[in-house]
Length: 188
Ligand SMILES: CC(C)(COP(=O)(O)OP(=O)(O)OC[C@H]1O[C@@H](n2cnc3c(N)ncnc32)[C@H](O)[C@@H]1OP(=O)(O)O)[C@@H](O)C(=O)NCCC(=O)NCCS
Image 1 (tube, rainbow, N blue to C red):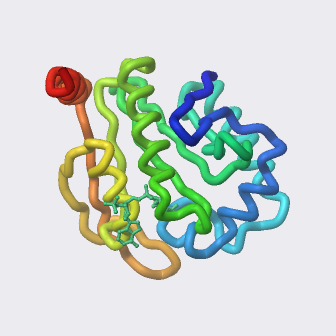
Image 2 (cartoon, rainbow, N blue to C red):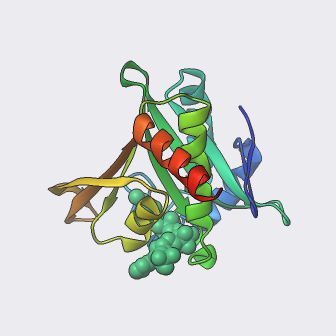
């Protein structure tokens, strides 16, 4: 699996050694509460099984998971993944960033890079993502990277005893190509 580089970030494959840091950052209720999969409280030691399950899923082409690391400090600050649906040549983005790193545009920087990778290198036909409508940090990232709003599924999921509406955003390869071409023409 490749490493992806942005101005401030290195997105790299997970290693078992990341387990402690994942537990530390994802163990924060404010990070877990707007995701569907992060357990809370995060059981001590269980991130190792999580990482092993990711290795398995990667072998089966179900997922690509990147540790989001600050380039300078080489410190893991979050995770971003693209779930792959091979029959449809489609990928679903999901991400979290440790709370002390929120609001620095890291989420947007990482998501933009993985989206470009999905279209340009994985040759996906569609990339989409979903977020609770009550989680503006997440749907703003989707808007900022150029995903388009497709609709909202009402009370589609429940988390910690409360139902949530899910907003879906997506982009097709043909739309991505057109937008990329337009940008390069406008920059000339
Ligand atoms: C959602 C999350 C990834 C955002 O990461 P981040 O690195 O802080 O995001 P960015 O700094 O790139 O900011 C994204 C945009 O959302 C906005 N935003 C962030 N939090 C917000 C809030 N609470 N209310 C309104 N806007 C908010 C930012 O201002 C920014 O938009 P702007 O540039 O127009 O100002 C992070 O908050 C997180 O990990 N949350 C917990 C897990 C989660 O919700 N994951 C997504 C599940 S779908």
